[in-house]
Length: 377
Image (tube, rainbow, N blue to C red; front, side):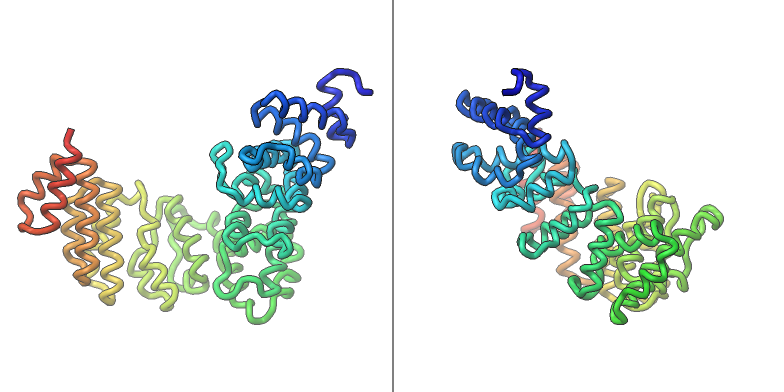
């Protein structure tokens, strides 16, 4: 028998001797202890015997099983990230619990494993077809993985044809990680990609090379048409994020000179570059629309986003309404106007009520007055 010392019992449980720890769990259940206390001990047992969860959980009242299992996953991951994934691999009930939306410490579903993404077992486990994780769970998990081992597994799956078409962001991130981590093996990495995917590799390389060269360029340097044209849509969005955080922006004129697929993505997401560095970006965009050869749908997208930016970031509802009124599509124009006025009525009911007085008589005027009246203190 082990001495009656909790510290010794815990060490023994992690070393594989869990008889005393299991007895402690039974005592806690019998005294109706809280899940948090039981999960601490349960995690110790599962550290060395993850498959035991499926037998033990049947002794727990049914209405407590999922929550307790999820809490045990969380506690086990705090011991070592690998152990949490070993539990998922070994226990069908752990997989059921991991998919559940029962909230534990503000975590729902697969997010219960969100603190275990540094484990090299992450991608190996979530991508194992026998474990039947959904595409949503896979994407949510792989967006957060870390480590060369996970990056290599993701790229192996991609090269094997798992994701068709434009690669998911986590594929590009995995490529970037290995591109920097294994400089000597870059060529071998590139050669291992099937011919049909080589175009995407060229885009990955272009983004990485441009990012590497950015530090050597003068502050405020913005990539030009030739540099941007070498990218794919996902890589262009990475550049947009870089511009936003660096306090620079790519002019709209440059975006309109890009290949059609990049031009479409660039115009639709143009204002993702906007933040406190560019308070006049929306106004400058609207002022220059007439000078550019834009289709109606492109004008629609830019004016809608400019109006939204003016309202959300500046709180200038009148300018937002003026810009939305210039949108070519009547249906879209009406939807944006109604959305802005509805939000104004909820946030500043008196101003909205006064504005509604000047609106034409009709359904929208009545709706805004009603919402504003209900929101008045």
